[in-house]
Image (cartoon, rainbow, N blue to C red; front, side, top):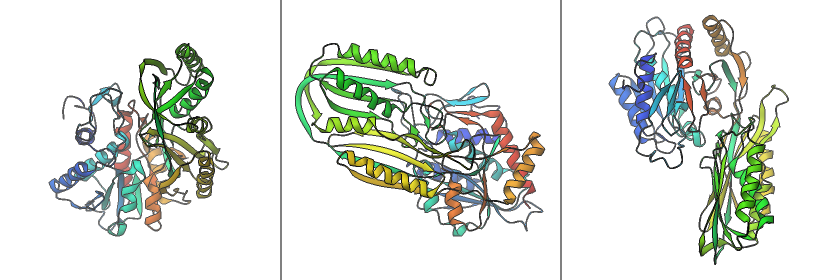
Length: 481
């Protein structure tokens, strides 16, 4: 191992995690990481299959004494969400993540860490290479492009998989056992733009420093959505001066709460516009200080020049669209305490020369509620002339009663820790839903170490909880006869 993660136990897990970090593996960039997995299998003389979607399935025979046991699936995904600090010279297509130790945590230098879900792959590889581990036949299922709609899992042909028990290692809290998750979809509004040329002073309003985060896990944590905040600022600015819109850009991942947004405006009369907006931003800063202590905003004026602006009256419609955009928690569950049942996140605003795109990520633990939310957005979209696309549909993973695997994990956890894990349903999506749809009578659970601020540059992985989860999996496999 290199000095960055040298000496962390279990050493083989963190050896593989560091190797995974070194391989570019953002969603949509799966060739290199799939090749890495196939090379691992070849090096350890394990049968492996790689499909056209770059999914990799690796097979390990049963340990001595487990030859007659039913196979068990160990499952994780190969892709990561790519976010970096503004201005950082880093190319996710070619550069490796640079992890470092911070006390009990592992973080990355200026980028997302990719512990979601690289640490799962690292644990699986450590188990696959361990000739002393006790376990039934293992089917290691490593999927691609989970973060952009469970694409790999959807494309995977499960005919080659014989197991009916699956341990998904994509949960993010050591003390919990996840038994259900939300389904979801992406709702995209594409608004055609017509532009005109004018001479005016360009003004840039920048919102940044918001906490962001996973749009499922943190959707009810009070984190401010930068795109929604931009609508509030623009609505206030309407009363402060006459301006046109050049662009509004915020967020680059639908499933991440956007932490920044930049508005480019064309100002016809400067007056005290900058001072007025700065004063309002200061009001917002004080209002959200407890939730967003690092929020920062700026207003920058440029010299007069020729600018291409969006023609009116679309400007007012765009401001209305942002000001009234549904976002955040739509419904809480009536059956499961503190569970967000339905939500949506305006994750991306992108302005191009001839169009603006607004992408909402929708989630619900109920199919009917998800359908209603899409219907609601179709009606909302009528406020502007636009085309609509829906994609990335995936179904919820519904709770399975009398699950043998759940009961076995709870027993194993209690013996190891001293108490049972908290059994939870989550509002994020997990591939358990896709595999439950494709594999009849599948019994699955989702577990994982403590990962905080996933999908952001503050992402961290707990070393101690990683060691504990790895030990728990080994103990659980030993019980799976």
